[in-house]
Amino acid sequence: MDKFKITGGRPLSGRVIVSGAKNAALPALTAALLTQERVVLHNVPRVRDISTLRSLLEDLGVDSSVTHEAHGNRIEIEARQLLNPVAPYELVKQMRASILVLGPLVARFGQARVSLPGGCAIGVRPVNLHLKGLEKLGATINFDHGYVDAKASGLRGTEFYFDTVSVTGTENLMMAAALAEGVTVLENAAREPEVQDLADLLNKMGAQIDGAGTDKICIRGVSRLHGAEHTIIPDRIEAGTFLIAAAITGGELAVERCNPQHLAAVLAKLDEVGVQLVRKADNAANRTATLTAKAGNKLRSLNLTTQEYPGFPTDMQAQYMTLMTQAEGSSVITETIFENRFMHAQELARMGAEINVNGRRAVVRGKTLLSGAKIQASDLRASASLVLAGLAAEGETIIDRVYHIDRGYERIEEKLNQVGAKIARVSE
Image (tube, rainbow, N blue to C red; front, top):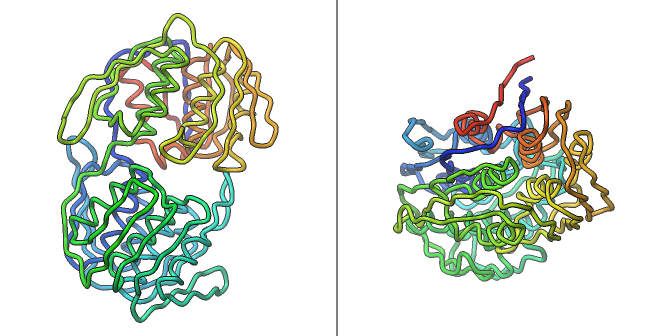
């Protein structure tokens, strides 16, 4: 099992390039199930979750190939036929986003048998909204020994209101509705950039989707979809992580190929706490830019509440908490999305942080001296926060279970080492 050995106290300096967004690439891959023609995706990150989903798609009978490009991978997918409508527990348990095959399989092939993903380290994350929405579209849902069996002789447009905002739920129903007869309206839909990116791909494939990026999405079903070529958006969470890395080490990083519009809430908060930010446009057509970040003379402690997009993302909460350990004063961090997303706090405490957790609220008292220690990652974003802590700490930090970070960050240790970090990946 791989570990990171980090020698801290080294200011970062230089340029780092943001990879494609894992959370946009995953639904894009499953969207290829909706057509028998070839779908070509560019800027796909080289991360573990993508490999896991490709394995699942190939298990279903999908052909895929990968080509390395200057930025990320090019993946070609052809779902000419369905050999096996089953998404087994062995694959689904590795990545909850596997549930995204459910909508496309039912819409195009009329059947799917998908393992229930169960709970995860950061919370329960139920899939009941996915299933209720598919039932409204006309699917029959049954449960059998931990699996969802879904069947439909043909889906029909409907109106569906999400009781709570669900990103993967919105994506699943949007894909299913693309091949349904009639019009589907999704209310209280997720507004995340990743949802918008999926809608862009589906429209290139011949779908008729309006309103993606708002809380009301209208899908006019079509009889078939065709192949398309699409470039995945930049990963806003990776970009935010690198911006905090610059600030917490007292360095200066130019974070290239990111979309500042997707980072509005994060940039606003970093500006408030005293991180200096400069924006320079890269590509107007792709809306990418270079954001340069460096710490000011003093970081200020400020409260934070996570929210659905366009609010401050829960996926940046752990990294922000690490930053607050180096800010002057106390801050209260409130987590509203997941009920168990403070597990990194106890690991930060092992490094000297003063954090008091009470339910969904955590009080961070700064500024504290962090010192290297042996710590353990519990989930993807927690692992990123521990890497940041290791960069800021005195001495050597050893992070165990870094397979979590490999799920969503492409070669993070290599990228950081190129800008002055000292991180060694070791296998034991």
